[in-house]
Amino acid sequence: MSYLKLLPKSLLEDIVEGNCIPIIGAGFSLNVEGKKPLNWNELGEKISIELDIFNYVYDGPIDAISYYEEEFSRAKLIEKITELLNIHNIAPSGTHKAFAELKFKQIITTNFDCLLEKSYETNCNVVTNESMLSTNFKGTTSIYKLHGDLSDPNRMVLTEKDYDLFLNKNPILSTFIANLFITKTPLLIGYSFNDPDTRLIWRIIEERLGNMRRKAYVILPYANQSNIDRYTRRGVKAISLNCEKGKEKEAYTELFKELNAYWMQKLNDKPSINIDVDTSLKYKKYKKICFLSCVVEKFEHYKELLMPLFSENNITIASMYDLVPGDIIFSKVLSIMEQVDFAFVDLRDNNKMVLSELEYLLSKNIKCFVIGNFEKNSNKDMKNFRQFLGYDDMNDALKIYVSSLNNNEDSLNNRVDKLLKEKNYEYAVLEAYKELEKKYIRYDNNKKYYDSQYYSNNFRQIRDVRNTIVHGNINLNKKEAEQILSQIFELLSKASM
Image 1: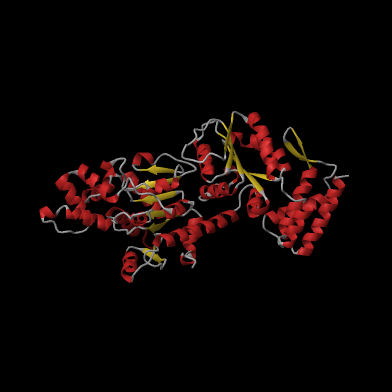
Image 2: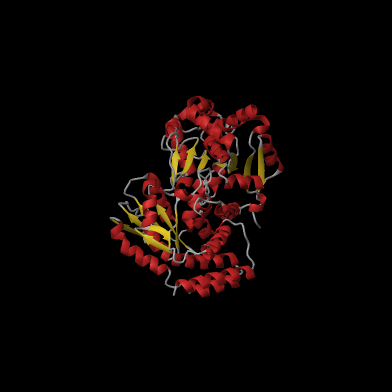
């Protein structure tokens, strides 16, 4: 069964375009490895047992937690919740890690545990209070812990008083969350929407915007009609995965994997500034890609430095600077980094963005050639990491590695024949054109120019066809492809004389 088909097209569009904000609740923490932690209501019931000496009558988790704090102190409440939720011992499962593979730039959670952070490893920034909102952490996912966590127990939102005073004590954070609710489609996962503070923000938005408020969605492993009706009353559309009880973890994991594959495909279809990057991603099966990570001031310098070697070995350079600015740039960069063959990284400017890119590349087991100092994390497998003092120091190792990528490649004729048999006519032409361009391009001090000896009208015409293919404006049949290939091979034979 495909769970992705259950998600409305408009929601999928918002996810891909970066216009969706996930809200992760306590229900998602149940997908841990091993013994499940208590859910919110079970936590309240456990706490209420210790209130029997006061003849307490259970009236929901917030009431029980508030009563406990009143009787035993805030410090004892934090200790009890930490113990009952087993916060220090639970570990993320494959479901959490599958979620972390998705390209969300921002996530809201009301959970006190650290399961999300552990799933992202170093590729996230955790925001627990207002003072951290003004910091822009590029290249990482920001996790907004709306109700705090154990790093600052006094800020945790637990009791009636905490909820009642939330908006007054956190006006900037409340405004920030409201802005996310207004501008992005909320997607609830394991979240009941029972918390008074978030529900109040949602209601205020409804009162101000009316029918212009964005629709919110909740993904449920299964749902009865009363659950669906409760979410509907709160302006939330329920999406049920209709899985068997006890199979929630598997259903969520499969959905996230399907969504990630769909997202990657859509991101690859999004155009970038560099058409060579788009072509390489589209025909990744036949191309090699190097991700170049450095400060923008050095980008053109490194491209010119690397281009002769890379062009000779059929390697495309990709970077975040090739992308059109917008909401999807974060997810598009992550998508590209996951698909490259190796990376070139210059850390010497102590740029946080470059460091984040390196850490992400290493987390995806991408081979990295690094200039500058990097403190190796003993928890990571560093077999794909090679460190150098400067470019000259790296040059020989890079040449050997690049040459090794092409050791097993077939001749041009064999590659073209294979592509024609696969009915991949457009890329057969692109593959041959690439070889032709090598013959026509010369380098002088790393500057590219066309050799006028061979720069003819025929070459211009073939180049125009190549540009039309790259931009997706033409589909060739076999006969058309063979005619163009015949012209290319004729020019190649002349260039070899």
